[in-house]
Length: 501
Image (cartoon, rainbow, N blue to C red; front, side):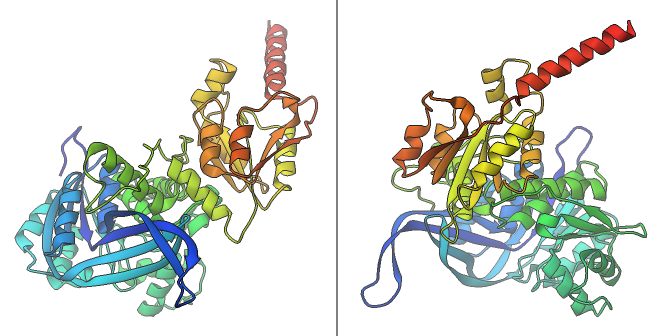
């Protein structure tokens, strides 16, 4: 285990897959069948399953040892080399070829997914080496993807032995083994939890409320805590107390939930490894999972990873290739802390909100102290289309535009207030002084701005029109502004001080 001041050590045990994305464009149909023809523009490969979980743990600042079957083929060697740049790999034998999930995509949308390889069950397990790795862990995270690792008798015995004296987090899979008794925290999603209740014959209906399901599973599995994740509703934690605790999630409009479970489990494990309680760990995990969804999910993460690989010469994963035009180096992903959105996250938001040929409207501003004028503008903007994205200036951008005393409200809080409005479908943060770079990625059908801009030319208008969008000015609710609110607040404080004196 880690000593004082050292980075926490998390051992991830589970099933690794290879995520392969084939990107392209579709402009015609096959002449001999009613099927689209994909002209490939790029191919990306990245570790998935427990490999993705381990990378997320490492990205959170922990030391990581990954215990997982890896196939003796070119893809397996590539996975081992790719993962080895960020963490320590303890490979197990792997039955069959590398398990792959191949996604064929066009315009940010998946056309088909093809799974092959496997079965992936572990072989030739070095039990003594695994035992030593578990003993050195601050937390063991089991990331099950149904290939057989959690069914292996030798590994289960070691995990059960460790759970009696150490901390084990278990992210289950419907085809995987049940958590071993004594596990500190199990993190099923709601459908997995309901299936677990039904399989255990725990007496709670399979379609029961998530709090009841969490409590039933804790008893059925004989574990210390179960956190049932319910997507946008947050998580329900059944622990040592008599009552289940609810951890709500911040509302996320749009985004991509793929990989959110891995992000949740990784964040919870790292938090527990640094001394957090179970409830604190689940709270951090809920926030991080929401941020992951808002940033574009696993697809945005893979795109950023490929871009980073293209700039450092590693290729972004085994066999990865960048699109011919070359990717942009991404900014940090947008998250619940109010950091700027990456290009990939912006494109993912636009793709999600345009589904079903919906018309996308965007508006922007600082929104420092949200007031009635802001609300009127946002409500009017939403009526111009089917979905509304708010481009919000980052804290650094607001300071440059408004002065060193601004913003009054930090970006994370500003975004949360805006996301609570029914007329707002998504909020993304940008760091520049104007939104042209963000609009280049979003390409909205309508760019709406408050009428206080008058007849002054908008620098971003050309960008909007270049991609077929139009610019609309909205009525301005007179007498409402953040500056006037701050000035009135200052006068009020001054008068109160005089009265006291």
